[in-house]
Length: 290
Image 1 (tube, rainbow, N blue to C red):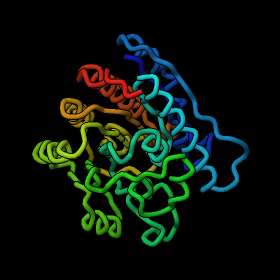
Image 2: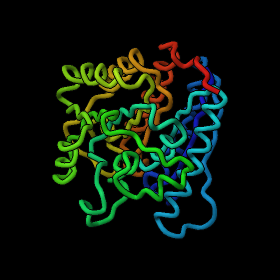
Image 3: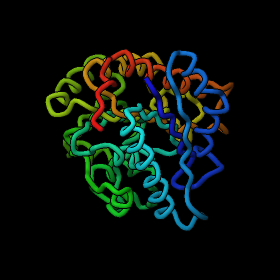
């Protein structure tokens, strides 16, 4: 299997600090070579933003438009796109590079990421990527990717979400999104995936590393106790790969400046290998849609 390892080293369009440093840190730790050693053919690509930073909306739109194109090209070659993202907003470009109306989204995150400008007075875009993907706000960012198609709420499964803001929690409860709490993962995830499989057979897998408990991943901007273990996520990825073709996957939200003894780096490297192994082992990556 050929892996297109795509680095998107940006935090809401900004570079050089915080979560924007995460992708480069994985590459410095030779994640590409670790995947090669496991038998994968790996091509590393880096998304480069055009020009100087103007404002967060134009920067986010530019990064995601370029990322969407990289994902389309990888899929067109029959490669598996594995994205090293900074902030979760990079999911917008990944989904746009696929076929949003035909895929499901499985989203591991400590937070809801389902806010809107109305529920988020600060205007923090990092709390809105799933709302953007579902078509609830900032449609201009989605359109800038060259694919304004949205993902239906019923085709989204969220895992963890232990630290959602009250307004986001209400929005999620009133939506068609299925939310599986961290303490329900063994009992509820399989049923949610089975239900999702009645509508789609391909998914985008999004893993925000703060879905892990800070014990395993302290290097994040918004830590919250009570999260998943690395083994929890690995087991879940294996189940997902048995049911769906994982069309693309992302690992986001690692801030090396806040890491302790490289714990988060090691957890992320392990999860990247787990995803690649699961995709290759499922036998579902071989179909080429041209």
